[in-house]
Every structure is written in C-alpha cells, then in structure tokens.
Length: 262
Length: 354
Image 1 (cartoon, rainbow over the protein chains, first blue to last red):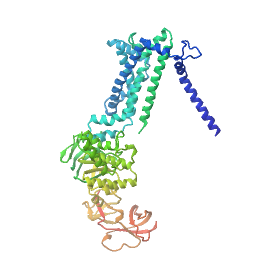
Image 2: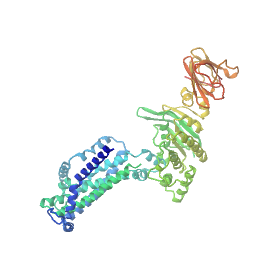
Image 3: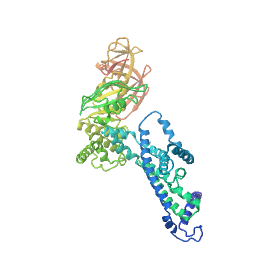
Image 4: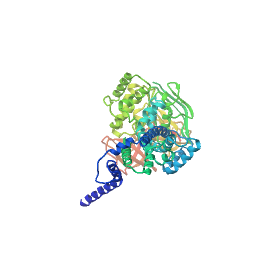
C-alpha cells in the first residue's frame, strides 16, 4: 500500500514539475505585464498602465487587427477548401490519389523558414510581392494540410452505408452531403478550422518573410518592437495572445473529444 | 407495389465474375430470400436491384419499368442494411422522416406518416430517442420503418437480422413477416441462414459462385433439390453417389437405391441420390415390410447426439457416415456400436444428375 502511495505522490510531483516547466515563464511574463517596474523589479507593484499604453500604440493595434483578419480569412478559406478536398479524397477513386495524399504531409514537416523563403521568391516571381495578400496566401497554404489531415481523420470513422442509406431514401448528392456527411464530419471541420486559425495567428517565420513595414502581423511587429528596445507593453500584448490562443486550443481539445463520441 | 424481373444479369469486378447470367422473377407482393454462402453474389445481386451498382449486361425491371441504368435515388426502393445505417445525428423520428423530407413533403404529412410507420414497427413512443440509445432490435425496427415510410415499390433487406442474437432474431423474423404481410410489399431478403430463408420466404433462390443454382418455394427446393449443393445447403442431406439405373442408382457395393423423383439420368452415367435425415427409419431388427422400404441399408451406429426432442444417429455404412434424425417417442435408444438397419421410401429419395 505504502509503495503505491509513494508512487502516486511521485507521479503528482512529476506532473507538477512538467506543468511548472511549461507554464512558469508564461506566468511570470503575465505577472510582469501587471508590474509597474519596466525592469522586472520587485516588490511587485500592481498596474494596468502597460495595457493602457498598449491601447495607444497604433502600430501594435493595427498589426493585431491584421493578424486577426488574416487568421479569420485563412480559417474560412482553408477550412472550406480543406474539407472539400477531404471529401473528394474520401469519395472518389482517381489516378494518382495515393501520391496526392502523400504530398499533403511534407509541408507540415518542412521548416517554415524554407517554406517562407520559397514563398517570398515565388510571390516575387509572379508579381504578388510582399504584403497582406502574400501573407494571407502563405497562411492558407500552411493551414490547408492541417485541415485536410484533421477532417480526413474524422471521415475515416464515417460509415459509407450512411450515404448509401440516404441515397436509397431518394436523397440527391447535395442532400446526402449536406444532411448526412457534413453533420458527421462537423467536429473535424471545426477542429480543423481552429488549427488553421492557430497556424495563422501564431505564424511568425512566414509572415516575417512576406510582410512589409506598413503591412505586418502582430508576431512580426512584436519581434520588431523587441529589437528596438523591450517594453512591458510586449508582455501585455503577449499575455492577451496567450489567453486567446489557449482558449482556442481548449476549444479544439473539446471538439476532438466530440470526435471520439459515437 | 411491383414485381421485380432480373434477366440475364452479369457483373464482373476485374477478373472475378460476381454475377454470371442470373435471371429471377420476383413476384409482386412476395417474400423472396436470396440464399447462398458468402461470395455467392447474393449481396451483389441485391445492390444491382437497389441501383448502387449497375450490371455489365442484362436487364432489371421494377414494376415492368426498365431500371438497370437508373441510379438508386430514383428507383423508389426501400433498403435495410446489415448494420442498420441509422443517421447518428438525427433522432429516431428524424431518421424515419428523412426520405419524405428530401422529397419536400409538407411537414404535417411527414409527421403523420412517421408516426404511422413507427406505430407499425411498435416504436410509437420512441421517436425522440437517438439511435445510440436503442437496443439492436429497436434499431432494426427503426431501419425498417425508415425504409417503408416512403412507400417504396420494393423492400430490400441485406442480412438484416445478422447482428441480432438468436432469441431476438426469431422474434424479428416473425415481426418482419407480419409487417411485410400487412403492407403487402415485394420483399427481397439476402441471407446466408438457411433456416431463416425456409421459415420466412415464399420463394428461395439459391446462389453459388455468382450463378443461380435453383429457385422455387421452400418446400419444393427442400423436397426436390436439383443439385448436391442445393440439397446440402438448404437443410441436411445424405448423399449417395453411384451409377444411374433408370429409377435410382447402384452404389459401388452393389446396393440399389430407388428414387421416385428427380432428374432423368441416362443409365450407367454417374448420379447421386439425396435423402433427408428425418426421412430414414432406423431399427435393430429386419425392416418392417411395406411400401416404404424400397431402400434398405445395413450399418452400425457410430455416434448418437441427444437433442431433447430428437436424436441424431451417425450410422456407418461401407465407409460412408449417414445421418438419421429420430423424433423422441420414448422408445428405446440405440447404443453406439449397435448394428442397425436403415430403411426409407423411394418417395423420400431424389435423383440428382452429377
């Protein structure tokens, strides 16, 4: 009995250490965004000045709006295209299908630095150049494989007899997709959409390559600000991003759980 | 309602001939069982009739209308799948309503029809449940209600009772038969369970390797099988092989077996005789004289299996093991190793061409 209790205690301690390792830097940063001293000096003195001055920082605010807009548009486009691609890959047999499916995975593994360089060169080559449109195109390309993988995984659990049953009841292809297949894969579509949002909103490397001084995203703007000289405003904006990102990831986790339900 | 005609239908998948020139006339309002082992083509045939797949050659007609190139959604059929295929995102009532709803029927009509269908399958109160909250038997009924609510011309059932346990299956057999009679719909039922085929259907078609082996009413196939396969696949049968004599066969050991019915086989050619185990009498002494002892064989009991209302004796004769089923009449039971005399009439014997 005692051995079991010791093991249990050790287990809890281990998890505590793990969580501390993961979250301590973030917690300190969040706390410092409320500390009056810009140089991390203690004792801790509560203030919301940094959040207030963040509000005055037009560059950061416009970059934030850019990030949010790009993330939302990326989510919509890549979720739509990705889900349609998943359905096509699930439903139809065609030449080169296996090859095409295999081609979907490497972009996830290729370093973003390389993808970013390649996109920069390519966009210049075809005349799009840098800027928000280039960033948006880049983000959609990055997010698509994630959506396809997540939605396809959900489709693997779909019973093809359901589509056959719907057809036998007189439903046309549109009705079958809309009323039987889509409701089933919806948790996967939503999870894929959240992934797409996260990929875009957290994206630094590719955005950095494709942004111009006026047209930039929040992570790139933060990096630029830090290079100029650190201010706790960055702590403040980072805290906001972390809260939003974590909320999104928790939502994703919740929808994945949905996916496990029969 | 309508009959279904399948004429010279063939379908190959690559080099595999799943259906090979199959022709069957499914009578209007009848209950027809397609029986066969797995891989015999029975499900492929059902899918051709449903319209999920089209035949390479041949004709399919529903109610006299050619449908072999009409897709499933336009065929006005009802189908029950082996795993029920209920829509998990819909309630029981929404599942049943689906076929009417995609047709754009008015809401009031749909509600009334759905209730009627659910009442018919005795699930009138469960419309609000989700499929995963139902038992296997209940899901089966929902699938049936969903398939018939649209008033299809034909009801197709793909091993619908396969996933149920034995006791529930017998209940559902009776229930399915009752509902089918009540609405009088032409029903085609795929099964590999010969007992199910015998008890439920008006006609049976036996398939093997993509070909129709024999078809007809259950009694006819059981009493007059035209092949060894039909004899042994539908029920149990003792098969004797020998040379045709004109009214039966002669076994290698010289014993003559007389058969009153069956194929006409040229004298001297190879042929078989089939006898059902319950038609054979078993006794210890000489067989009693009479008309029904056209066939007499000596043997020795090698094994007895007692099953309550009957016993099965395995009797060895000249290297062949014969099966005899005897009703439990309270008479003395034979011991293993005992010499016995088997006798049966020529009317119980069917001659089969090799």
